[in-house]
Length: 238
Image (tube, rainbow, N blue to C red; front, top):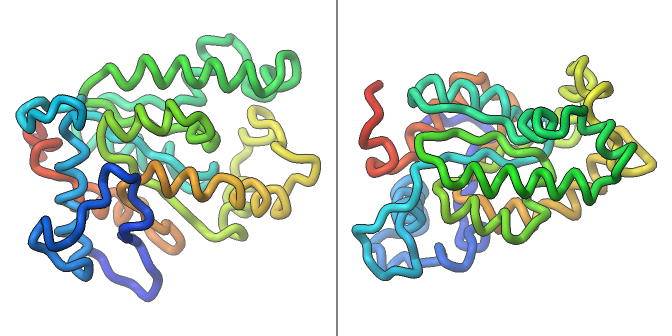
């Protein structure tokens, strides 16, 4: 695992959804062993909790969640290439189905219509295997989508400081044309406000948290791959 002066990954019982909060003594692990604990959590996530049959695998899918500007699309594409899986960005798929940009959907039909299309996209994607999904920043607002993503496989929450997110968004020439402001404030004030509302939902959904501040793309990808369980990678040839 790559170590630097800042926290790349934060594994804590409070971060994981209820069905993943297994006491350390049950796993024979100590909470100070994050990689091992995470592997155990991932293995628990890969099997259908409702069947009680540990031999019934869920779909092999990896999801990336987080605020825009945290690297979900870039990391997702690289992960898919390394895994030899397909990759889909849900924002791109929403725009493809609607035939309009997200900004245009917000302007003509409002956010509820966008969220419905986004929900429909996620419902379809979680039925697939060998897929890396980069979700829109607000995909986790829907409780059913949070549940579906968790049940489909590991969910990686990419984070970054507010100033870094703002800087990355400004450097993305396509953002202003395709993405609407989410509040009347815009800018750093908007990022802070929206993150305050969304962070509890990101935590509920995530099985792995990576702070991308100061990290190279290759380092983020390597960290995700190192934490994936053997069951998920059984058909992967590096």
